[in-house]
Amino acid sequence: MMRSGSPVRQEALEFAHHLPNRQSDMIQMLVNSESEPLVFIADIDIQPTPELCNAARSWLHRAVVERQQMFHSGPEPFVGIEFEEGLSGIKWISANCGCEKELDEIAAYARS
Image 1: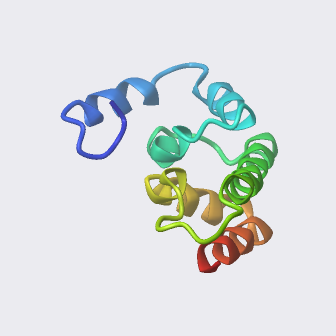
Image 2: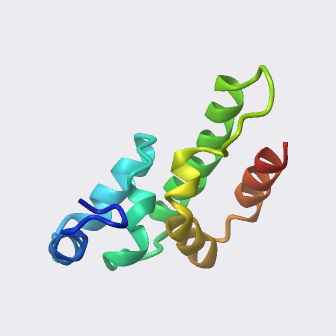
C-alpha cells in the first residue's frame, strides 16, 4: 500500500502519519532488517532520534553485507530492490542521520 504507484498510497501514508507508535515501530522494523520502512520513512513524520539513526545506520550496513554474501559469485544486474525502491528513505537517512560510512559501503557495493 505504501509503494509508489499504489492507488491507496496517500491514504496509507496519512493513516501511518497519525499512528501513535510510528517512531518505535519504525525503529523495530529497521532493527529487524525489514526493507519496507525505506519506502515511507520520509513521509510519516519520523524524528531522527539517536535510537532511530543507530537502527537506520545498522540496517544500511547489514543490507550491504547480506547482498554481498548472497551474490558473491560475481556482479549482479541490479543493486537490490531494497536500495532501488528505498532511495527516498536512504536520502532521508542521509540528510538526518550522518551515515557517511554506510553510504560509502552502498556506493562501493553498487560500483562492484
